[in-house]
Length: 382
Image (tube, rainbow, N blue to C red; front, top):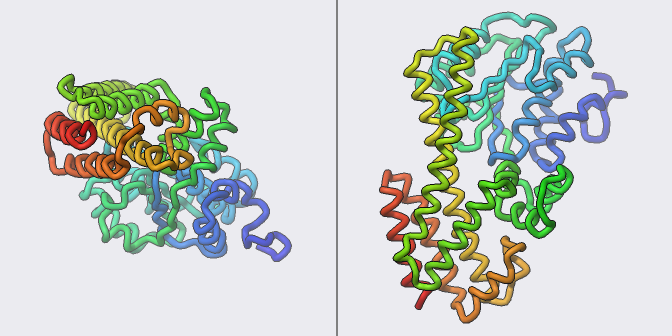
């Protein structure tokens, strides 16, 4: 790259897509800009969902492929398409909750030995790398340690604890931070999502830096989940937990899991018809894992929404409603916070998060929720 092609960021003028993808990720932009001169053989893009890892990976891969192509502009254009028709860009995403072991072996490990179909580079991107089973991760180690000179690997991970340390240590890590609430709010408004400014502001703050979660909260399922969380805390405040309000949260999570399970089963069956080898058991297991994962995600979101409501009650009770997340529900928050001890509401939020973490120990969800809300009733109704 000539000096004339370098702008003040150190990135070639033709890499606008990379600049755009990392607009709100200054550290990642700086690291990837510097890496364009001599890309490493393996990267780990680590950060929360919705932080821009996926777009940054596609743009970075496009620049790597363009650098070794006879026609850089055309190579870049094809690599940026989603899905991409570029033969030297392999993009692997789990259809269910986990990557299929054989798919990782065939499309990444074995394929990495093949020379580029065009140009001088091949790029392999593995989305949700933590969803690879330990068997797949261990099998990938040799490819990460001693890849062919023309191979570049990019692993994306939102849950770093699911990735083996032996895998992570063989990659150059690029950190992606949660997006600020004002950035999420601007993105949602620019996308023309349905909702009042107050509703969009609330979703942006409740999403904890995750643009995908913010979009979910603005949809029908997200709005219903927020309403259920509000009703649960309201029942605890009113001393009405005998009505088991938490069951609605479990029902919402179960319905979301069932929808995803059905959709994944249909997708896997279509792939089987198209010639991809998958047994009936693999299809059923993959669909069930996807459903369980979605169910867990929605239930976790329900816990977060309950904790956020209690946090907001504490803020309003303390006279600091300007920091409330639920901007569109201030009237109800004021009514519920009247006479409430802020310290009790804060302790309630802590109890919610403690219970959520406890579910990782295979505790019965229904019993854990029942115990939680009767504890909240005792704490708040007093």
